[in-house]
Length: 295
Image (cartoon, rainbow, N blue to C red):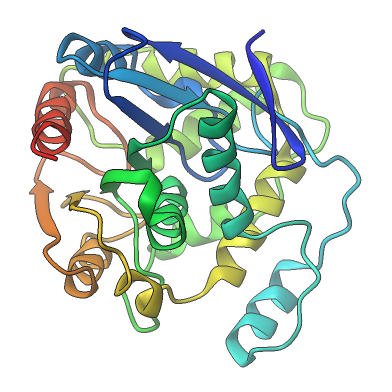
């Protein structure tokens, strides 16, 4: 399995496309494995002349899981973050950003176009603000600035997000939980296979099931707070993409990102929620490839 040591963890990655092509680094979201990037999406970027690297973040998939790491509860993390109290977390979003940069280091890549979805969007914001000389362009997908006062998920999704995952479920129980979680935030796309959610949930469970890792990543997001001041430092050409039907991170959150990054451009997609629906993959590939090629 292709793994590299990066920033104190082992990161599993896959590398597609010509070795001398410009690089696009894909960063996935909360508790979600790299397999959530559609293969058609990856190959579409490769066919447009890019080398595409995608990987499992720490605490998910086949990368290092911080098993046994002590972490505060969700409620205390929210309170402490709200009032600026000290927090002892296993890691922060900035550490996950450093993971991505050190992965590039390990592969001998000096600069890349960085693309992040959801929490991955937060991670690439940190990369662009802190390691600006490593970034050729940035694309943020269905993410947020973290600013206070922005709309959030609806009540039912919030409950599911905050609920504890079953620690030792049967395979069928875990898959059923995963299917419902995916369905709740996805667009009802006519191009999606009827069993797509079941196949994705089963593949994710068989590859790596770790509800504690999901929770540690969620704590890192909560503790990250507002990135507004940080966004103002980003110099990389920035494309921001969001689905207008997103029930988890409403599109106004991306509108706020664009408000704070000089020159950033917003693309809204009506037929997209908090997912990468099959019917929109070609459009997404076109947007990202054109943005990267221009820079």
